[in-house]
Image (cartoon, protein in one colour):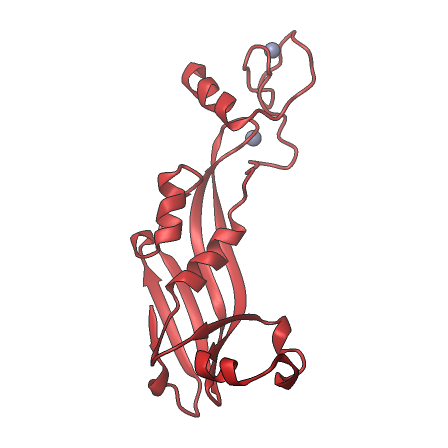
Length: 181
Ligand SMILES: [Zn+2]
Ligand SMILES: [Zn+2]
């Protein structure tokens, strides 16, 4: 997912992409670590604009997700669709510019830098997706979870143990998964 800086002239350039998760090392790593599964291609639509020596990328990226509820372990699907603006400054220009000279507001933007004549967007794109992946996914905000005594799913059944649902730690979850019917 590279932009050739010289190809961006006065007119903004539209980029569409549709790539498998294997093209994004951070996301494939999260998948390998079982944090989530990405169930389809990562897609995006971006507009690349030149502003003097700097490049502004505005757009949105999306990814279909498969998650396991952190309370009841049920598998469910989710969809990430997030928009962003990233401002790439040319490194040589940054070196010659003090912060005072930067236009007001520029420092607030998500910014990165580039050198040479290419900008690789892969990492920026996958970070946008990764930030949206929930660390403690819930199938439903009201999910009652599993009984911590007997492991029964309190969303669909009840038991005679203590009624207080608990959020289990990740290592405990793994053990439960084996014994769950
Ligand atoms: Zn749940
Ligand atoms: Zn119980």
